[in-house]
Length: 73
Image 1 (cartoon, rainbow, N blue to C red):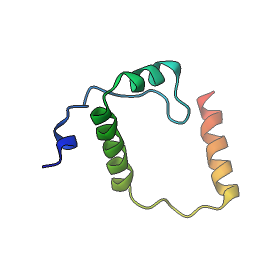
Image 2: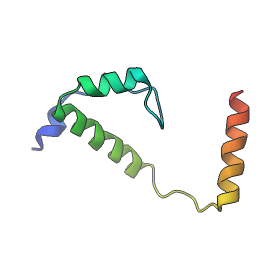
Image 3: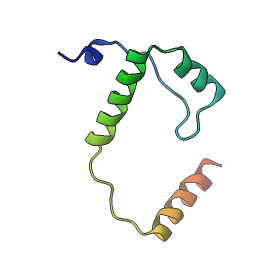
Image 4: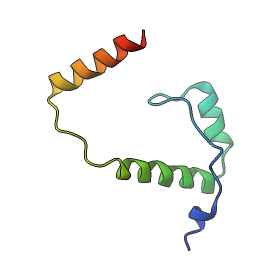
């Protein structure tokens, strides 16, 4: 069995999505190499399970992101 899969990282969550906050950077720096690898594997699996991204043009992507951002305000 892969040793990484036996590491409990269920309580480790980051708040930032693109650029890490100071808190997320401190959390990452506090983790062991095994924990970091386990988190990377977890996030890769989540991305894989989400499926293929829909085809969108650059203009469609920008419009969608801008609309989502304006809804957050």
